[in-house]
Structures are given as C-alpha cells and as structure tokens.
Amino acid sequence: MLAIALAAVCIAAEAASADPSISAKRAEAERVNGELTRLEASLGRAQNAYEQATVKLRAIDHNLTINRIALHAARINLHKSQVALEQRLVVIYTSRDDQTTLSVLLGATSIDDLVNRIETVQSVSSQDVAVMNQVIGFKHEVTIHERALVREHRDQARLVRQRAAAKARISSQLARQRRLLASVKGEIAHLVAAQRARQLALARQAQARLAALQEQQLLSPSSNGIGVTAVTPDGVSVAPPSQYTGVVGIAMQYLGVPYVWGGESPSGFDCSGFVAYVYAQVGVSLPHYTGAQWNAGVPVSAGDLEPGDLVFFDGLGHVGIYIGDNEFIHAPHTGDVVKISSLSEAWYAATYDGARRITG
Image (cartoon, rainbow, N blue to C red; front, side, top):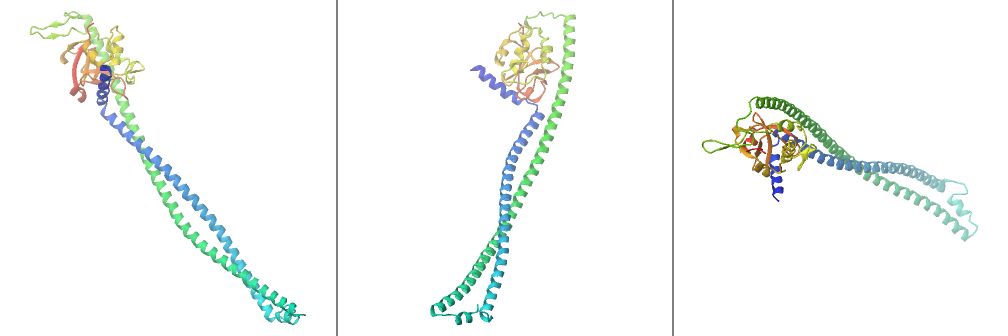
C-alpha cells in the first residue's frame, strides 16, 4: 500500500516538473489535434449531407427532363387532335360525298339502318371530343407537375449550394488547423532539439567536472575516512565524503532513455527505478521507492552536496542523482526522458526536501 501511495505521489510530482515550454506546446498540439478530430467528423457529416442533396437534385433534374418530354408530346398530340377534330367537323357539315351526315341520313334503307348510321356519326364525333379532352387534361397535369418540379429544383439547388458552402467552410477550417498543428509540431521539435543540445552540453560539463573531481580525490584522499560520519564541535553530524561519485558517469550513459512508470531498466525508467538501477551497477542495492531510498542514506546539507548524492523533492515524491554545479540527473515524468536539470529551477527549488548520501 505504501509503495502504491509513493508511486502515485511520484507521478504527480513528475508531472509538475515538466519543461513548461515543451509541455505547453504539447498541450496546444493536443488541443489542436482534438479540434482536428472534431472538424474531420463535421466534414464527414457535411460531405454526406452534400452528396444526399446532390443525389436528390439529380433525381429532380431527371424528372424534369421526363416531364418536359411528356409535355412536348402532349402539345403535339393536342395539336393533332385539334386538327383532326376540326377537319372532321368540316367534312361532316360541308362535304358532298357519301360520308356526310346528310348522305348518311338519305342513304338509309330502313329505320334501323337510319338509327345505326346516326349513332355511328355521333359516336365518331364523341370519340374525337373525348380524345381531345384527355389530351387537354394530360397537358394540364404535366404543366402543373413541371411548375412544381421547377420550384423543387430551385429549392434543392439552393440547398446544394448551402451544403457545398458548409463543406468548403469546414475544409478551410481543417486546412488552417492542420497548418497550425504542423507549426506547433515544428516548434516542439525545435524546443526538443534545443533541449537535447543543452542536455549534451550539460553532460559534457558534468563529465569534465567528474573527471576533475576523481583526479583530485586520487591526489588528495579525504582525511575523514570513507563511510565514517564526522561530528562537529557543536554536535552537528556531517556526512562522510561520497564514495560513489562514479555513479554520475554511469547515470549519464542513459540520457535520453524514456520515462516509463515502474521502469527500472534501460528500456525505460521512473525516478526511483533509475536511481536504483544506476547504483546497482556499482554493487549497491537500493529499494525502488523514493521514501525507502531517503531512509537508505545519511543526511547531507545543500552546501555539502557531492556528485552521487540523492536529491529529493515534493514530499519525497521525486528523486534524482546530484552531478555537481547545482545540477542533477533524473527520470522526470511520462512523456519525457532521462535528463539533467538544475536545483535552481522554480519547481525543484520550491519543492526541495533535502539530500541523502549513500555510504554503504
């Protein structure tokens, strides 16, 4: 239970210690990416609505074409029917041949024949009138349908234009967001590259300091004695000189290794896992939790820090290895890598708990 609590504290502390500029840009990229996702979904809906409106407009165009063909045919048939009826009426009332009404009546041979002849004339005339009326009715219906289709076509064309404009507007917004995301990613890459260059410079400086310190230790061995805690005249305990300055060189081999929660290998470290792994390379077994690591060493004041000392932050929520010149190396947080930071940085200075020196 304690381990889980300490790990949770470590995550919160590490998140707070993120590089503010890179973290802010990554947050901006995440926001822009979310907006892109929303716009892409909107574009999909707009595209679908535009296609549906366009399909309906094509159907209306097709119906208009068919209706206009039918109207043209109706006009032709109406004209033919009118001409035929006029011609028949002229023939019936003016012609002198045997097909006129008068000749039909005079040519009857009996009352029944007369009745049949009259009915035939009337039937022919009624059929002509009925056909013409049908043509007129059809032409009227087709004309009304055409007007309705024209109105529907006008409305649908307006809808298609609106849907096309909406699609174009979303596409334009998408293009702007994509350019913004590319710009933010470019800034992040620039910041990361600058940070990497700074880390390499810090690593070179730390290596030079370490080499100088080791040379000094060889030439001037400490008089306090390794592993012995000294006590000043006023009774204040003083930690013995560090015997593990060499862990700094080991730790620096893992600069750039990604942070992995619970990680304790070169494939990924969390803060205490990194410290435990580095010290294990010199034969020192440390627990994988910051609180236990605090208890594994002896106190050392900020003014007496030496390379290899453990520095703690945020209520023992985070730990790193001091490398000299007010700097330390650590595995900061999710999304970051093993890197060098300064004790003077705002968050670390504000949350500094103290340091411990490993003596055994």
